[in-house]
Length: 364
DNA sequence: AGGTTCTTAGTTAAGGGCAT
DNA sequence: ATGCCCTTAACTAAGAACCT
Image (cartoon, rainbow, N blue to C red; front, side):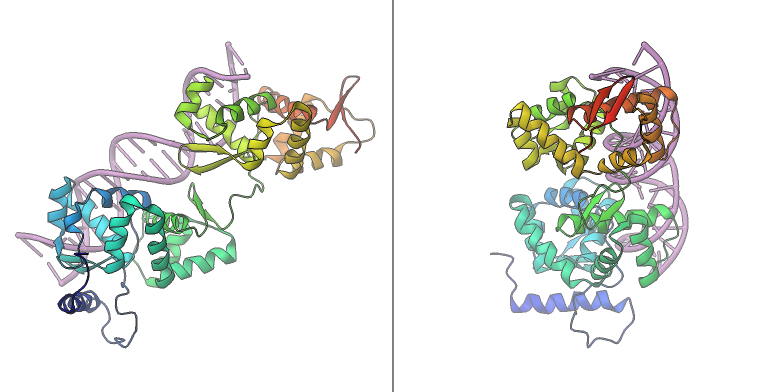
């Protein structure tokens, strides 16, 4: 209630907007978007922004009262720079206006309050902002064209379009990642490890190497049933080292059994859930379907292509194939390691059958 | 002088390969 | 089957440099 704008405050707001505009090209004031920021870009990643925002005492969040960098800094016990980083980000989203003395905008105040209690509602507000702000449109369009963008490319685009003088590649990445995380947060694309994708990582060339057996996969899925788990908890439960486990989980993801909704947390997909509940026979069938529908299908196709009339499949031939398809150089021992896992999958799903001195594909 | 923007160093997480 | 070590990459916080 108390942050409702009164007549007088609108006047105040207008004044601050003018300050904002005055430091760039004058003129062009006929522009309807009077409160669109000029020259600011998100700097903090969305997670960090939210984290700091939540610490700011509510009394500072007002579209009536100005605040200063110093005031916030001492209120929450962080450096001026940190607050400035936050303010720059908030300005880039039209959540804050002003210079030296700042004021929340209506959406900015709403967002800052809601983020504490109702993340989805806050998201909605931010999503609206991304629709209004030009550089987001630029990135979105670029993303639609290319399907995926690295954070470096996003940064580069900003330099090109808006004449920023960022020269350090790390700087480009910083800004690029900030923009990418915001789009991800608001539901436009998915950001992960330096790349913003339009589609949830569709396994293309880069599916993980087969790290684990079917049995281990099922064990993991059992542990994830029904509600998912934090990686720490899961690791403790299974007695598998965390780093190792995250690799194994990435395999389960590539198979479509497991989902990774947020950092550190994994859960079963619908199909994953079904499989853990299925009987052995049904489970085999479902597993096979997933294998054939996954990126690993390509390996099976290759296997089929390269096999001559009475060639046998052995750990050696399979290892060589994997090495080639993944474009790596492995030692013999490593090749064997991965070949064993993959063979385990093929055997389990009945794609290969045992013959004298090796395996062969079952003709289907 | 004080405020703001860009860079950077140090830290943490993820990924990859090997060996037991 | 899986623990461990090493490399690479991302994140964060804050300092340096630049404005006004």
